[in-house]
Length: 301
Image (cartoon, one colour):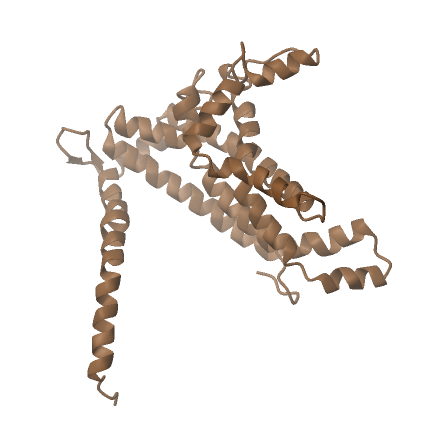
């Protein structure tokens, strides 16, 4: 039989609940509530100012079988993810390796690579909007200075997504910091043991650094993939989804459906489909991690 709680314990519990109540209410009102509401809306035919009509799964059926714009936006987002995620991870890992060396002025280099991350996203996109300008942008000026032809960058449907993929490497500062922390946590005695066995720099890199970094690579892969599928600012600020829907990211299409066309029910269904796509991709990555993610002590995830 449990002993009755003392008055002091009950008072501490009540005060604890009281102080946690704002956070609990905030979670319920601003997170769980909207999620539940969006699922209900996704089952309705509802435009802002109109009457809400329950239509079951018709929104989902229309999206998956009749909506060509949905297919285009999903293609654009997948194309962007396939380019930006591997490129961003590779660039961040290489930069982290360089920043992990003992060279003079290292703190300055680390600050320079992290600075774009603390600049507001809209300011970054405005900066790149100028750099991509075909007439007086920085990139075409650099190409012309070395005798190469310029490009239309985001103003041509063939080069728009590759341009945005290149731009995505601008904001990899957070990924670099995480990789750098992972590199500095690799046990030094492993490198010392490799040197005793006659291992050179490449042996240490492929047999110690890479395996030790797989948990960090795994984390950055999942976070980068989720972030990439939520790309929005580029289309909203720079291209408005054009030219010819070549940069129509999925979230931009969702936003346009909800707040320009005011189709809240249809947009909610789009949001839930995006949720399931990201969830499936995340589960797939977790399932493959058992084969390539190594933890200290030889254990795998």
